[in-house]
Image 1 (cartoon, helix red, strand yellow):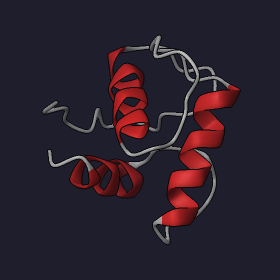
Image 2 (cartoon, one colour):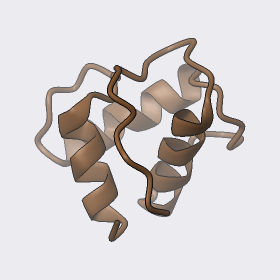
Image 3 (cartoon, helix red, strand yellow):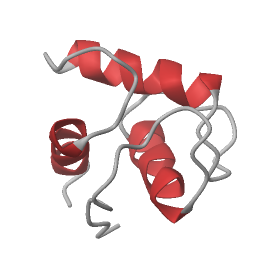
Image 4 (cartoon, helix red, strand yellow):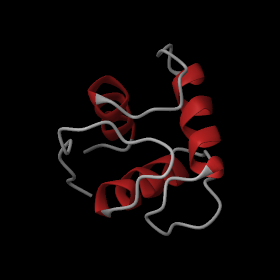
Amino acid sequence: MGYEYPGYLLQNYCEDQAVYGIQQALQASGFSVGSIDGKFGPATQQAVMGFQSANGLTCDGVVGPNTWNVLMCAIGC
């Protein structure tokens, strides 16, 4: 995938290419986001929280640099 951290927090109501990337990565890691559409909604937030919990991260449903790096490593980027 090769996405780089965009430099800002990705959270509910964000909508951009970076969200599309995390949705793909979450789906590839076994966490359902519903539709992969680049919109950070409740399903994406729940998937992020599940991923964070499963990986010993702060479970806040927000993708910052720590969650981003662990997620990208999980899919081999």
